[in-house]
Image 1 (cartoon, rainbow, N blue to C red):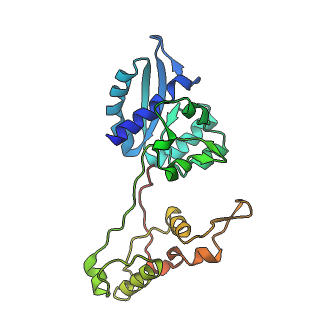
Image 2 (cartoon, one colour; image 1 turned 30 degrees about the vertical axis):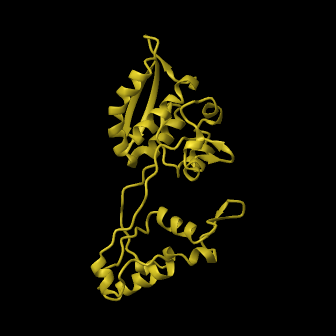
Image 3 (cartoon, rainbow, N blue to C red; image 1 turned 45 degrees about the vertical axis):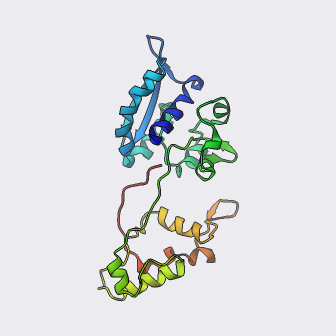
Amino acid sequence: MRVRLRLLALLAALPAALSCAGGRGDGKVTLRFWAMGAEGGKVQALVADFEREHPGVHVELQQIPWTAAHEKLLTAHVGGSTPDVAQLGNTWVPEFAALDALAPLDDRVRGSRTVPPGSYFPGIWDTNVVDGVLYGIPWYVDTRVLFYRSDLLKAAGYDSMPSTWTGWTQAMRAMKARMGPRQFPILLPTNEWTYPVAFGLQSGAPLLRDDGRYGAFRDSSFHHCPAAHRPTSAAGHRSRQSS
């Protein structure tokens, strides 16, 4: 129900203000909406309800796999064929804002009765703000959790997973000491940027330097985070995040 309400609020906030939305011969406004991944497969069932509640709007939905979404959005921007509304990973917001591919939403949100900013968690709302300008409306937030084998952890001398970075690193080393050369205590893909960046942020690393123009991955604070200790992790592949 929460996902449905967030989707309807997102769509309802935009049609009246979208000057680029296409018209139809029956007088309805056509709203082109691109939804990604599994979410795209679920949205279709919600569109019928939305159109019943907003009879003047027709939603034209296109489902796109996350693996193709970034390139497709860039291509659409270059070709001048972007959708009216699109699901977007919040880590992409600064990039598309820099390309001038996103419309500012501050005025539209101020004039909306369905998207009150105060009803959103400030942390996720701020991920859609670049240089003081709002470019997106949060749809949902997911939480990453750690699954682990309690028996293997206990065999290494731990009754539960440590709650500090130092303890976590020591536990991984203790588990690794009991394993073979091609065995690893944790699946932690080091070929995806999200993991080392998340570790860096949680350890207080700045990530950027020189007014945000260069990476600060050689900063001493970044080297203190678990991502810097690659022997305790195994490279792997995982499908991209949704947001």
